[in-house]
Image 1 (cartoon, rainbow, N blue to C red):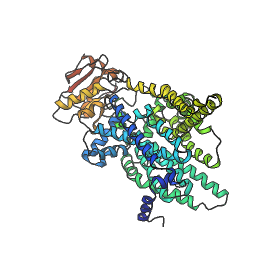
Image 2: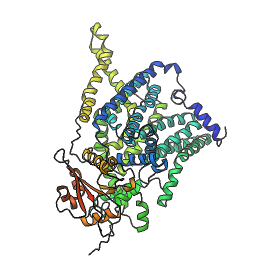
Image 3: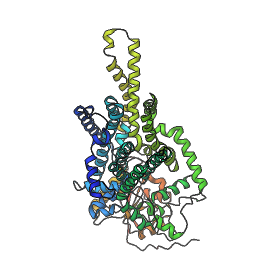
Image 4: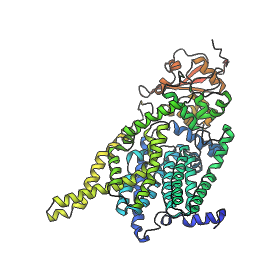
Amino acid sequence: MRLFEPYKLWKTILKNFSYKNIFLKNQKVSDFNRSDCFYVCCIMILALLFRIFLLRYRFAVSFDEVNYLKLAATGAIEGLGYVFHTYWSPFYPLVVALFSKVTPDFEWVGRMVSIITGVLVIIPIYLFSHKYFGRKVAKYTASLLAFYPSLAFFNTRAQTESLYILLITIAVLIGWKVLQNQSKPLAFLTGILFGCAYLTKPEGIGFLVVFSAVLFVYIIYYLLKKRNTLPWILVGLVMAGGFIAVSIPYLLYLKQKTGVWTISAKGKANQQFEAHATGLTGVKGDPFRTLSKDNTEVAIDQIYHIGSFVQAEQQRGTPTVPVRPYVVLRKYLENLYKVIAFAINNAMTSVLLILTVLGLFGSAWKRERTKRELYLMAYFIFFWLIVIPMFHINNRYFLPLLPLCFIWIGNGFAVIVAWLQQTMFQTITFKKLRTFIPKFALILITSAIVIGLYLPQLGRVMLRSPWSLEYWADPVEQKSAGEWIKKHSTQKPVIMSRGHTVDFYAGNYNIAESVTVPRNELSRVLAYAKHRGVNYLVLNERYRSGYPEISHLLDAKQVPDELRLVYQEEKKPGLKVVVYEICAVDVKLEYHVK
């Protein structure tokens, strides 16, 4: 087959794209039988029901969820081209928009897409574990993964991570198959999956970088051995072709919108966020939430909503916050220390970390396993020790690679069960009791993990309350205000707020019309509101610290003539929300700096 014959290439891909060819080619087909299929199906059904049960502890969409669902809703209503944005990646909104044809409830569809993709990841993990560690370890792995409460609850969020996890897990595992047999069709498929991962989260391009680095090592090795490197080069080219095939529309969109070739505007903005957080840039205040001199621009809206941040900086000729190499290096080293010292342990918990170590080093590695483990570990080293410290440490940033960890966790579980069984066989001499040792050891270790890790995590989820006052909790008060605005508005409302949950529930899905409350005095805030065509100003007690200059409006004090209080609610102390209608009066845009 010639390299550039698309029809034959796709035909070969479809022919090879089955679990037996991808994961079990060098294994007897009888080894993977109906009992395995039945077990996986049962585990997936139970995992699905578990996640649906956890949905009751989600009370409203918030923060990133709002922006992704707005893009999805606009794509479903106006056309799929509207899922593109310079900061927010398009693939998750695209998938939600497509499935929204079933029902117009975008929040429900968004959560179900995350739940289903979170459940589907069990399949490749089971198959990979089955191939390299056997049926018993595969069952341990699938069971531990399916019911891990932190990951299961995270699968109920209406944002990108669950879909991203599924894509990168399949891509990484098929990538290992490509390295084994130099399959061009699978290389093309892996490139497509890496491309879809990039379109889901821009850092997904890092998986292509890691695979390319591994491929480069293979090529160097073959060169040193004076062997033919052409098959490896072709694998790299075919994979790059698959990546470009799915990525090029978005890359062209970014070039058109920003004027430069870039993989996303997200990296530029986030680097400035992190640089400013160090306090070493010399920039005072909050430059991202402060109005421009003419009261027409706020950087945070240009980044998250309008999508014009890169263009605006190019026109100004200066960045909002300078990102100096010294600041970046210092931030990286500080974060690297935090990652190694406690962040990985916090993200995985000590129990899973111990099982991971046991699964990796519980037995000596043979040559083939050494290559496989180093291949998988390369992704962890790149993302956990290079990418995450470069930006911001958050437990959820460690989650995408966690399902791959469960391959080792499942093996570690088998190691500790085998150790306990052997120990009990050597210490218990009573014959009738010895027959129960295998099952008893399994039950004992399982109970210890369930009681010591799974139940406490589940309890933490079940303790969540819709009336939580935490800053990052679901803003149910904004949801109520949004539903009230939707019911009482005669037109699509443009709302100024913080967090923008209220926009979504008010029915305005146009992300460009999300307007943030600036960190300025009230007269300038109103000037910006008029410039953006705002109808309502929504303030809630939860985010009071985000707008101290106008927080007196929460108590209906010093209310100017331009504002009319139309709604207020306080279902619980600390959850007060007020809605002001902005009246049609003349508000000057000019602001003269003294």
